[in-house]
Image (cartoon, rainbow, N blue to C red):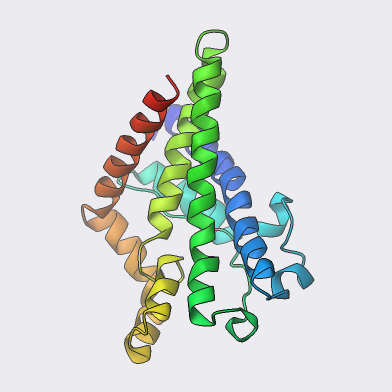
Length: 206
């Protein structure tokens, strides 16, 4: 482990925290629009990064997996949602869950536009923006995995996935994610998909 790897991990954590904020805000905003004010009452309908940070998911694991290589694991502080207050019930819950990854795709597009605009005059800014595009798209794709506590698991609930199987997944979700990222090709597959999306966005913005 060298200094360059440590610096890279720190940059990843900083970018990840920045990108997690609109992700969690999007969950809270979507829930509020669908009739559930739980997140608003708990102070989560905000773009304040401190409101959405989870020590393990936003700092420790992103840093550790960045240093170890083979993938990236991380999440923000979960936004509380009450499906009984949501219009559409479990379908509304799925919509709230998907708002997070959707916000990261939008943010990736904005960063790609910034990278294109800064490439000639401020290459260091452009390089950081490109790294943000990669991480934002990775966050979107990673969160669509159908494993609790990730957003994709809420789609399983909306699809009436067997409750007993979901509970087993929820109990072991953290272990499943870490093992899958570090010990299988999943992390490399997610990274490859992210690279493809990043190249597509950068070409779109010239």
